[in-house]
Amino acid sequence: MFAARGPFFTGTDTFRLKTQRHNMAFTTRHETTFGRGLRTIAEASLVAALGFSVAVLLVGTPIALLVRALHEGLSWLTRFGDMTGPFIEALVAVASSLGGVVLFALAVRFVLGRFRQRRASRHRMKSSDSTSEKALGHQLAEAIS
Image (cartoon, rainbow, N blue to C red; front, side, top):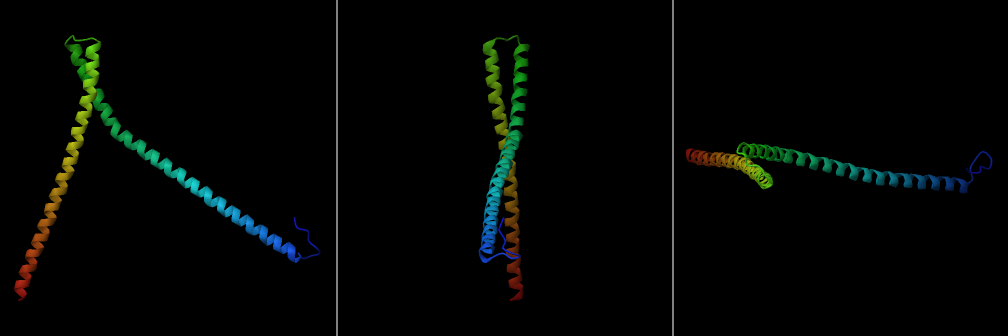
């Protein structure tokens, strides 16, 4: 690569060698950093997409099962009463979809109400603890004086 004159490099050859090594290290280091950045962004987007799909699956599956069960139940009732026809089938489909969404909303409201109730009871317990601590502090102050 470099023409050596005798057993040693000359001053210009040594300078060229140092400059070339510096440029290679600079280029490799920055390409590696850029590649790591791209890989990090790709991994983060993959994790976000998987998390979103799992969340949709966890929320959507109960809704779909509820609507399916309502549809089957309403279809059975209409067949049992000898009420068949395209209008009745459309009515069953709409009613089961709306009923499933309403029942799911009621279930979510119930769960959120339980969380609020629990939070309120914990808040009452904490406030009663602080009240008793204040009363103990006053009693202690009166006993000392």
